[in-house]
Length: 433
Ligand SMILES: [Zn+2]
Image 1 (tube, rainbow, N blue to C red):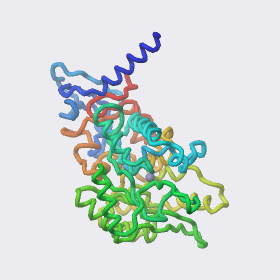
Image 2: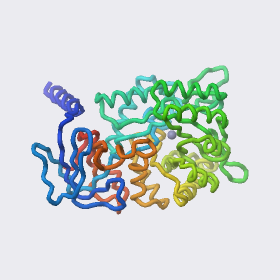
Image 3: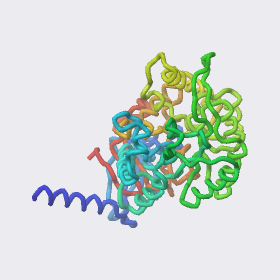
Image 4: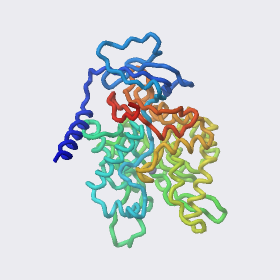
């Protein structure tokens, strides 16, 4: 009984912590500040948080804390803006055989089960310092992302700010589930459309039901051909994509396009996609077009190191080829000054795995730790249309603040050990005190 009482008390405390006191002033003493904007870290700073937002940032020196303010001492830590993951799938739990793979999640798990797991995933993201995510479709989880976002925004459970993409869009023959007897109707992981009229209608339906972004699949199957090149099947036509982009832009929203290479990638770029997801095999022409158009690149490098199939099988060759061409594509984009947004594809691998591994992959490929941090802060915020409000520690921004013990500019793996998380001015995690 005693145990029950104390766990109940804890639950009440946790719930209370999610209720905001809008007039609370918090002074954060910072050892090292990486604010998301400046080219270098700054020592001994003070951040003043009022309610949900940052009021001021400046040198500690002669700073006098306002009367009645509470103080958080992060003077032994490196403080950064809350991180942003621009490519997640809250409703997906990896592809592991023990979980029934991708098909098992759609065929054997009800929507309530999937939503329950998604709430855990959202919590996992926040624990790791990701205070905002662009969740790029629910993989058969319907409009669950919009519901989860609403519940988080209302303070019912902890999680990051969610930019939701709802169902995703592809064409007939352009998405799983597939491989079943043609007589059997199986669910699809996206909304299937054929023709510009259906494409526009799907975009309208998704936007009406709360999509912040539209997610489109421009390539689907891929394989290694007899010459050893990666080949991808294109899905939507240019006309179909243009209808979606035109509709989304009319609503002031943006379109994220999954595209590996080839005709599907070219259509994505010609059709006006705002971000290319994965972009495994970007040739010089694609990189030049992205730089010229200002198209974002969300490479999701780390996810392609998971679950390689046996070496001398068609699937195994594809797994290795994808990684082989991805690195040089990333480096071409980096050199050409293409705008890069950090994305993990978490959910494509289990949510128990560290999201920050992506930083290590980006740095391995030649990005500086500071640029990698920006891809997950200021750059991502710009892509999301939230420059100045997210991804930065500056007056007027939301008080989404994280801290690590070490120096991530020396060792970017520090970002995998986030020890303090504040979102919206509320402390969610604190392992430093
Ligand atoms: Zn994905």
